[in-house]
Image (cartoon, rainbow, N blue to C red; front, side, top):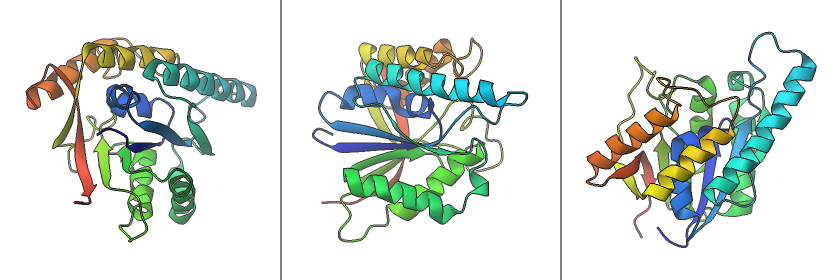
Amino acid sequence: MNNARVLVIAAHPDDEVLGCGGTLARLARTSEVRVLILGEGITSRPGLTEEEQAFGLKALRNDNAAAAKCLGIAPAARFEGLPDNRFDTVALLDIVHRVEAAMNYLGPTLVLTHHAGDVNIDHRRTREAVEAAVRPVATSPVETVLGFEVPSSSDWNFTRPRFAPNVFYALLDHHVLAKVNAMACYRSEARPAPHPRSEQNLRALARVRGGQCGREWAEGFELVYQRVL
């Protein structure tokens, strides 16, 4: 998809890399790519003082800017600062309005967001808000909405509908490398193997998704909405 206006709507810093980093590295060469991150990240972790939380949030935003450079995205993400892992304490309409404001400003043709069945409550609330905001009215520029998987959330869902990709973006070696390098920028979020967010497992997942579409590497998505032109 060339010359698209792409908007990623994610709950936390690092979700944009885990969910679609390789695809963003691919699309950034031919399309306008922007990222909206609704949550602040990190503040739900127990035992942190206010000073530690403030330092962690600043570090996360710096890490996001570094990750964006790895993917070829400029500028870095826009943050809304909703409370980490507590989106269920915010009225859904308030989240919808934040998403709508970004969409009205950017006019995306392609929206990428979370899978509806993720373990993380912020992911699910983000998806609900996006579904409300992308209603297919005549004035909407949105042509396609895709749901992405987030390792350690989509794959740890054992009771809700499982992630089942039916749209694939084939990747080249340098797209996968860009994703791996971008994830490494998130110093507080990357994990060693065998964690799903490790470099080894991110590469393994890209291999699996590639095999599902006849390519060496790929990222998989679920089609949420497609307007046939």
